[in-house]
Amino acid sequence: MGTPRLHIRPGNPDFLDLPWEEPISNWDHRRLVEMPTGIHRHPVVFVAYEEGVFAIKELPAALAENEFEVLSTLEDFTSRSAEPAGLMERLWIDPTSEQAAAVITRYVRYAFPYRTVVSGPGFGRRRVQMLDAVAGLLVELHLAGCYWGDCSLSNVLYRYDAGAIEAIMIDGETSTLHPRLSDGQRRADIEIMTENVAGEMGDLAAMTGVDIDKADLALGEDIARRYEALWEEVTEPLIVGRDQSYLIRERIDRLHELGFATEDLVLEPTGEGNLVRTRLSVVGRTFHSDRLRERTGIEALDNQARVLLGDLSYFESKMEPDGFAPKLVAAVSWLKESFDPLTKRILEIEPDADPVQRYCDFLHHRLTMAQRLGRDVPNDEALADWLRTGMNGFPLPD
Image (cartoon, rainbow, N blue to C red; front, side, top):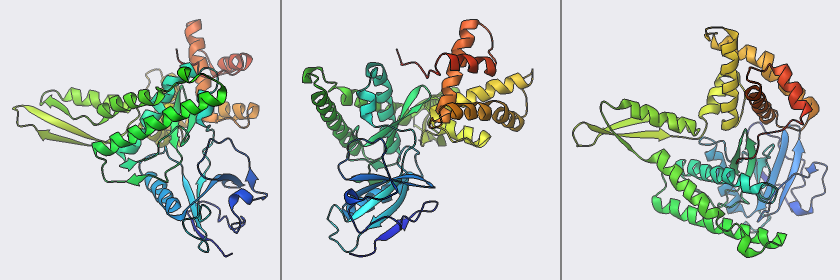
C-alpha cells in the first residue's frame, strides 16, 4: 500500500478523498454516481464533485500516461475529444498491472453511447447522421496528426448538435501523435475502424436476436466512404488562374459551411503559365462556435452555433429597419430578450436538459410555424405552441 502520484490539471478537484489504495471496481464511496456509458475494455467509474462529474478509467501505467498526454495535446486542436482532468499512478504495484494507473476525464454532458443511437427506434434515419459524425471526427483527428489506432463506435460518445449528431473521442490509450499523418497511417486507421464497427454491429445483432444477414455490417464501410470524400474536400489543393480568386473564396466558404476553421492560405506557382496552386491550413470544426463565443460568450457545438448565429442575425435585422444595429448592442439585447429568458424557462421545465440544444429545438419549431402561417412568429407565441405540442426536437432525417 502507498500514496498515489496524482497529476491534476488546473480547475479540477484534487481527488485525494478517493480510496486509491483499492482498485476502482472495489470502491464503495459516497462520490460514486451512475452515468450512462458504453462498453469499456478497462474498468470505469464515475465520481461527482462540485466542479462536475468525472470518469475514472483504470489501466496499465504506459497506456494511461499515453492517453493522458494524447488527450491533453488534442485540446489545442479539437473540442471533440474527452477533456483530461488528471492522471493517477499507483507506484507501489507492477506498472503493467490493470490497476497500475488511472486516467481521469470530465464526463461529457448530454452525451450518450452508440447503442442509444443504433438500438433505438429511427436508426435507419439517424444512420446518415452517424456516418457524418464519425467521418468528421476522424478527419479532424487526422488533420491534428492523431493516429487513433482503435476507432470504434464504443470509443466514441455522441451528442445532439441542433439537427445533427456530434461524435466525441473518449479513448486514446492506443493513439499516437505526429506532425503529419502519412496516407498509409490514415488508411490503416480507417481499416481498423471499418473492422471494429462491423464487429460491433454483428455483436449488437446477436445480442438483440437479429439475423446476422440483417445486421448493418456495412456501416463502417460507409463511414470510410464519407471520410474519404470529406478528407478530399478539406485537403485537396485547388489550382486556379490568377484572375479566379473567387474560386478560392468559394472553397473557403464551403469549408466554413462544413464547420472547419481556416488559417493560412498559401499560393504557389505551378510552372504552368498563369495558374497557381492554393493550399489552405485547415484546423478543427470550430468556425461557427468560435464566432458565437466571440459575439455572445456562449459555448456551443458547431452546428448549434450555426443555428444560434442565424437567430442572432434575425434578431439584429428586426432591431433596426436597415439591419445595421451595432453588433455589440444586438448581441447583448438578443441575450437579454431572447436566449436567456427562453433557456431559463426551458430549464424550469426540464432541469437536466441541454439548454443550448433545446433552444435550437425551439428555433426549429418557430421556423416551421412561421412557414406554415406565412408570417413572422413572436417568441411568446412560438413558445406557447411549442409547449402545447410537446416541445418536439428536430425531426428525424428523411
